[in-house]
Amino acid sequence: MAILNKKKFYIKTFFATEDIIQEITKVSPEIIAIDAPLSLPKGRCCLEKECDCSIRGHFRDSDKKIREFGPVLPLTYLGMKMLTYRGVYIKERLKKCFSPSFQPKIIEVHPHTSQKILNIGEDKKTIYSNLSHFFALDKTANELSDHELDSIIAALTGLYFLFGKFKELGDVREGTIIVPVLELDFNTDMLFFKNINI
Ligand SMILES: [Zn+2]
Image 1 (tube, rainbow, N blue to C red):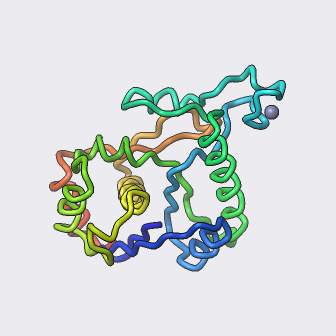
Image 2: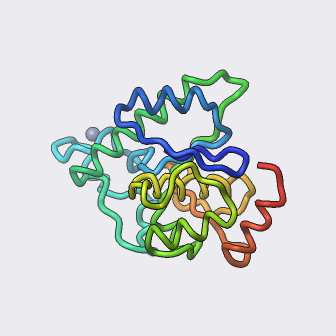
Image 3: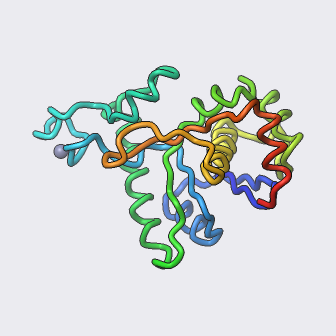
């Protein structure tokens, strides 16, 4: 988990679903950007191949659109299936954790695609170095796991979303994936963010 607050990333790792939910509730963020599918393909009640709903297929419209940037696994693939069920569960739980007057926006993101669009580098050291020009981070590059790095890029995508610099892939009735839209290049965009109070 990466919590972006006043231009600093606070990076944490949780394993239990309840710990994730508890921490998000405690932080009470404006945007929650999750790197996991948060919905099922239209017309599906589950992702089981034995179910009648399986004729509706393995992909959402958003999954097909994100495939233009690189390969993604079908939602029915074992690891993805678990991730999707967990993502959908966390989203539903989070909706109930906040009062109706303060509902954070929960968005689905795909950090690997964001990383390509933002062109902030391929490897951890390069990405870290590009980010550290604009943000403070409470971990060094060596301390960061690949998942934590993904969470930073997820949070960064949330920042693009917050400022309306994003594209929504897929069908809103089914569930979409948010990708950032570069204004000019990453450094110029970050200078814009740096000059406003976030
Ligand atoms: Zn089903």
